[in-house]
Amino acid sequence: MLPTRLSSLDEAAGVDVLCADKTGTLTLNELAVSQCIPELGFDETRVLALAALASSSAGADSVDAAFRTAAANITATTDLTLLTFEPFDPSRKMSTATAKTSDGATVTIIKGAYSVIAALTQESAAIAESAKSLEAKGFRVLAVATGPEGAVRMAGLVALSDPPRSDSRPLIEHLATLGVRTLMVTGDAVTTAEVIAAAVGINGAVSTVSQVEQDGDIEHVGVFANVLPEDKFALVKSLQTHGHVVAMCGDGVNDAPAIRQAQMGITVFTATDVAKSAAGIVLTEPGLGGIVAAIEVGRATFQRILTYTLRSIVHKVVQVLFLFAGLIITGHAIITPVLMALMMITGDFLALSSSTDHVRPSPLPSVWRVGNLTMASVILGLCDLTFCVGSLVIGKFVLHLSPNALQILSIITLVFTSQAVFYVARERHHLWNSRPSLWMMMSSLVELTLMITLAVSGILMTSLSFTIITCIGIAAIVLAFVLDTLKVLLFRRLAIV
Image 1 (cartoon, one colour):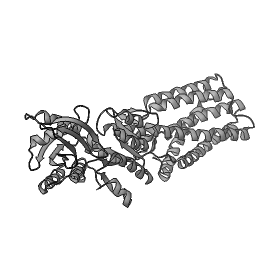
Image 2 (image 1 turned 60 degrees about the horizontal axis):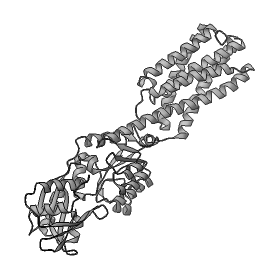
Image 3 (image 1 turned 45 degrees about the vertical axis):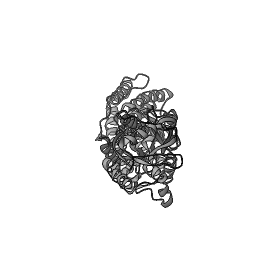
Image 4 (image 1 turned 180 degrees about the vertical axis):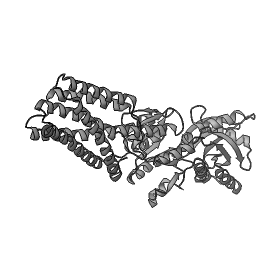
């Protein structure tokens, strides 16, 4: 998985709908000719030879590669000489070639989707029935036609097999547990799409993009069949109109608009340069594994940012209001510039260590609820502020500490409460539900040891009794559990996950 821009993982965190290509993503992309059914007047060898002439002689197209492989096993010679070749056009769903026969006549050869070729020719009832039967078995059915230009006739059907990947079903089920609905987007016929969807565990109705645009019912559709490249862009727009955050897979030039439009554009390393430039993530391995990893990493990153934001808001509320309250209570500044700088430096090391913390990805698509987050932070901050003011009041009116000692009392209180807030903010559930990282615990230990040592020894500040510092520490632990209980209630109420 290679992100092409810094915002890619943030975009992945909010995805709730994945539009996945069938070929190569849900299936192995190992197309092979499994069966050939000729029309009357043709045989299998002739049909495969015609199909090979209407296929590119090189390139990465898996369909043409399957026909090249099948044609290589044909021992019979053909009387046709290739004149021109037009590669597969996704909008027309067919490729075209012209060839010259041994007697000098020119014929046209067309290879493409069965429904397209059938509309151009007069097929027999037997061929139509065979096509339905093959599609019902999950084969990708192509048709081959030949004849004078404007008067081609059906030559036969070719069934291509492309088995589902063994990991597609479990990964789709895993995505469902993450709140991501997987949609299969394919150019194959409806019947073929249904079979593959059932094999990989995709539920929902089978429809087309045009049909959904007409009736507007997109929430109950699981498979989009007969999809053209331009349909993908319309599909993404429609899903976004319904409030979804969309991930779109694609690899061709014509897929680029849809990839760019999606919040999370995905392509593979074998895709065209245009598709790669439009995508936010390039997969280095086929299948859904890289997509699942991107979503989980994005959600874990979201959780770290959420922790930082929550902690920052709480600190701003406490520090600003505590300085103001301290000025009113004591009549002088309760924190000197030197002490403030010292606290900020040690606090920054703790904030940096949080990037190594053990984080669980969000269980649901990540959404920034700024209002709710601010409300929870302010409430937690006011509780923390009450504790800090209470500590200052006890120091002045109960312990009768000197102004300089009150400054040390204030800075020690802020250091202890910042530790409490940090360990409360890092976990969406109770703080004991997950273990902090070793680096984070070491940073906390260093900060606390440094500040306690300076306070007790009187270095850079007035000495403060170790007993008082111990009492503040114990009270801060109690505060952490109080804030943790309040946090769980607030997060549940405000839907912060």
